Length: 185
Image (cartoon, rainbow, N blue to C red; front, top):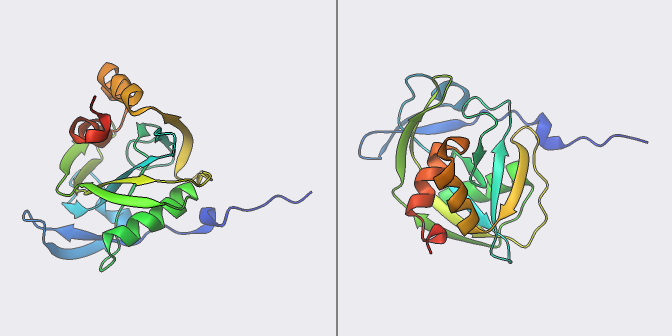
């Protein structure tokens, strides 16, 4: 019997990220491996909440190898567009890389979402992070370098869990859930 190799595990994920000024205009680029730390510069990112055709939302637990918020439950997936890469293309690229998933529909839900947060290890996230809602009919094939667990839940159940134990979730998920229509009654 031969073991199969997930080729995504061999990919070096060190694309450049886009640095932004306070107005949200690009001012430079830096390797992803160098952007996050105790003094993280404002940069461009995105988040995506994926729904299946039963109306359940995919929640993922971040890999323990992640630099920030390792092992924390979060939205379906996040990422950074490459310089000059359209956001929609970046979202689709990361869905495939992190989840092995093709997205059916993709809608921009929070175009100006911005946050800054510090994790327990002192790593800062400082992002302008447009938020997308997507649907899929595909089967999940998570990349173990990115995700260690996942669950499909009803949006109201996720909202209740976030309200009861916000520390168990990424800060951006908690903030986004409070703003997205998806999680309202």
